Amino acid sequence: MRYVVSGAAGFIGSHLCDRLIAEGHSVLALDNCITGSMRNVCHLEGHPRFEFRECDVTKPFETDGAVDAVWHLASLASPKDYLAHPIETLESGAQGTQLMLDLARRHEAPFLLASTSECYGDPAVHPQVETYWGNVNPVGPRSCYDESKRYAEAVTMAFHRVYGVNTHIARIFNTYGPRMQLHDGRVVPAFLDQALRGEPITVFGSGAQTRSFCYVSDLVEGLSRLFHSTEHYPVNLGNPREMTILEFAEHIRVLTGSNAPLEFLPLPEDDPRQRQPDITKARRLLNWEPRVTLEEGLRHTVEYFRGRIEGGPSKPA
Ligand code: NAD
Ligand code: UDP
View 1 (tube, helix red, strand yellow):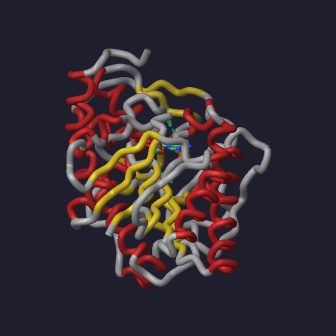
View 2 (cartoon, rainbow, N blue to C red):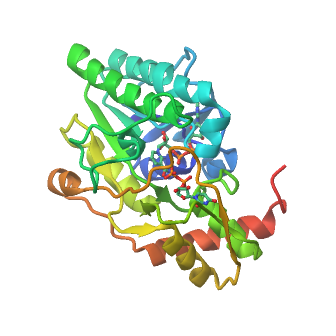
């Protein structure tokens, strides 16, 4: 099978490519590297079943040859990145999703959208279940991301209903692991970088807001199961183990053996106060649940970031 993966040089996309190649598929990897890095896929370069094409999926692009599935992961994904590139973020959710859906439609290929828990905004229902419609500020700073993904879900359902495309929607909750960008501002790389350097750990607000962290191999397993399922409505994929950001900072300090102090900074506007996936649907339909503990996942991630920090430049340009 020949699979098209957008966002392939990104964190999750590159792990997905590894899995598809290991399963014996061919992969046409698309990325414009706005936040991703060729470093994430350089180990696949030269592989006979791996082809990388630098391309912006919000502009019409050519694909020659067979297309047996389309995985659409291309998007700005960290708050720091999407706040810096709001238009590009909206375009990847809107034009990007539509062009990828069109590709799937032309080839009668199944399609999977990497959506997000941000569709729930600052949720009034806790934990978040797929039937909850969310609490999103449509004009706030995060709206470029939240609304782009909500639109992406809507256009995906429309292609399913109108053209019969075999679509799947994964609502991904905070996922972490090796190959996250060191300086994309997300809490996992930020805290690890700070702890490993012995610099202050920057907790936004009081740190009472909660998140639930899923290791990337669990997430990729969930994406694969969803892709092979018959479900067209959104399915939450994430780890239900919820903690405050303060508790998370403590985990990082213990795991890295760091004495780095905490530094409290203002809470960004519209930062969701709580987030925890209800994964009842994924358990029932996909027989899926996360297997990797936070301690184990963080150990792999710490190892990766240690290597990056020791081998890379001391600070971002
Ligand atoms: P990432 O930034 O590492 O990967 C996204 C990739 O998309 C990057 O390589 C980037 O260069 C590429 N990209 C962006 N716009 C593009 C465009 N117009 N054309 C081609 N490529 C483009 O982020 P990630 O964490 O791997 O996220 C992957 C997907 O999963 C995203 O759609 C994101 O919204 C979703 N998601 C991730 C998380 C998470 O916690 N990591 C949570 C929810 C949803
Ligand atoms: N956060 C923090 N310090 C940082 C980066 C993030 O306290 O240096 C907080 C952020 O305010 C949010 C949580 O950690 O409440 C998760 O942030 P992230 O950017 O990783 O993802 P989000 O879930 O907000 O999309």
